[in-house]
Image (tube, one colour):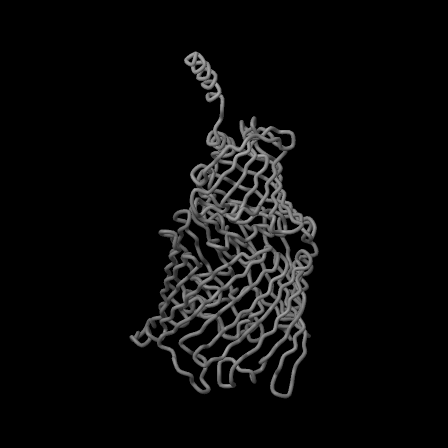
Length: 369
Length: 244
């Protein structure tokens, strides 16, 4: 009840702020509202038909050339409202470097869906929302610096400090708070020797007490390509088997082909390989297979109409989550969205026809204003 | 008698060759006029298409012929930036906090739904390094006498295999450009007017760009203010500035 009231208070406060903002040109408000109706199969005998809305309210500071701030609330709207603060940061630019503090997006490594170099957020969940425009959009509480070295190269040291679990604390003031050993820390170096983007970094994960180095490359040779790899080494009693089990490689290819009459067709193929995970199908344990694929084809008929077909494929158990979708931009900022998702596979596979949401059709509107 | 005629012909031809201007000279004069050490432009991009008219304001900073940073300032695109260096184009979308390196075929994509592609922004070499040029004659464009210069690519890697430029005979600024594919199909048309002199340079304050592959679409660029050869920090043209 306390949480619900707190959520309502935050939402009302935010709406009130948006209402008075036009008078203050120092801030830029924006709202992205997505409302969808979904028909989904739950099991052999039943379907569900429901509505779900998502709202993203953003307030950005503008005008000040040396200080930037942003507050973004993500809301999930059904019979009640769930609120998440997805961005809350201040960036300050000093001579020679800049620093960020707060909850901000950070993108280490390379990859649209699979990114072994992302030692901060790890693998994209197998249950990722395939209807989202961005499949990796996480933010984290951080304090970081950005030190430019040349036009294309920079160093970025970072400290990740866990946020306080306020809702838990409000319910129970005695609830535990993050300890001094929980923060993570590390940094990355990015350069572009010979036209290839090279990125190397390291993160010590405090909560897990592990060392996580990674390396990423990105370039273009007929196709855009990227390659990333990382390992995780326990701080205490590291074993060779730990290295082997945590070693993973991700790769990707992308090509955009212009067609006649202003149409364009893009192809993307990404893969994730964990050499020491299972290369054979396991009954009832489908969480860790050694090889996963993400193919995507997108056809832009014109500036307003796009069709896409994307899938997460598990070649080991021959199952897949296949999503076909359409974005139709009818008016400026307004889109009609439509998606059909199908899980192909058996019940014991990663994806299965008989699993909840084995087939889902959703259709709705999105408006950015 | 023969010697007299010959001598007369030579006498007549020498001054004519001295006065004639070659296609190479025209292009050199064009580039001398249009390329600045540095520039800051406050402008508007107006896209006219079947959705109506969309205005996007921007500030661009340029250094030489091949380095540029464009920052959009209109509400909808606030903070979106494009960095063009000698051999790279990067985009930054502040909403997604995403840095995109434009490479390969992706360069053919339209810039924010306009008639301009990212490929149109690439370059780095002078026109004479990339194209064989030929003076086709003179024609008037909107009443301005122009040299008509055709250009054919010397090698692969240029966005357009062939171009025809109509270059103002007095101001050495292009009044019209046609850009063609290898097969000879007209791909882009650019028309410039409202020419004004700023710091000794002739600048077109209004340009209309049409992608012939798009129906009912054109993009206008209007310069509201331009400052030439002003001090600009080198750090403006970096990933640091782009992602700020």
